[in-house]
Length: 273
Picture 1 (spheres, one colour):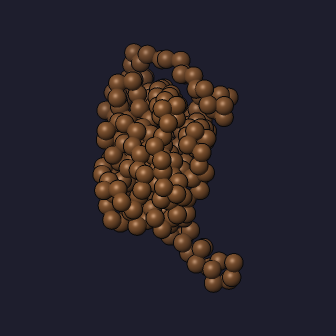
Picture 2 (tube, helix red, strand yellow):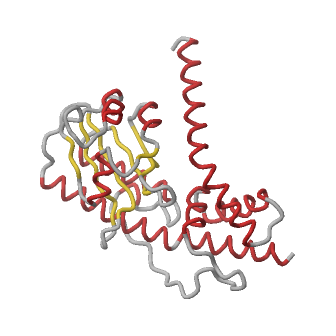
Picture 3 (spheres, one colour):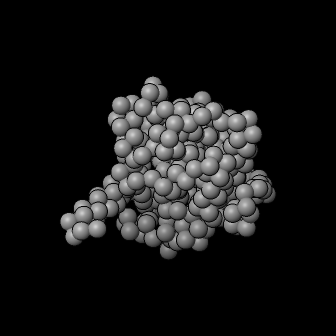
């Protein structure tokens, strides 16, 4: 790599980082404002400090904590618990080899295992996992492998249509795109971005609960045209999606809510000082 190429790559990485921060910052700022008002905190920095403590204590990403804080009903500030009478459930099992010993709070490791298992079933080395963005709508990439930097930049967040993953989320069903260049599911911009990355076909699988709620999508990408998936492949991918959906639902209503309970306790303590 020449000095010029190295500088261009550095600038692209810096731009991607700035765009990622721009997507996250408004949500964090909104959560800070809620906490500041709710617990009579002196400033936004105090609110951020409480969020960081709860995030680190429960190993929950700050963005995930902020998202839950913003979308869930506010607690009774006088009550010791945010979620009174909450029923706790056992962590659902996963059969993916890489996820078996990840522990209850390592969502990133579980998502990595979901991606690894999907790529093993589909026999490709390129793919990504997206989660439903409950604050903004659409999907955001959480795990990926084999994609170009430009692909990740373009598809960091996608809306409710114009892509195969959006269609899979909307229909809560697996979607195969045998030829990206010809399939009408894509907007022209999305099509160009996928083709420019070296992907010629893809297959998307919803990570869904038994009730049909789609919590994310795992997608495999291919550098050549795609033949029909076999019945065995489709069944295996359905199992991946169902297990991941159950686990993510458990994580949201157990680990994330535990982190919010901790945050609530910290806020009440700060208010009494």
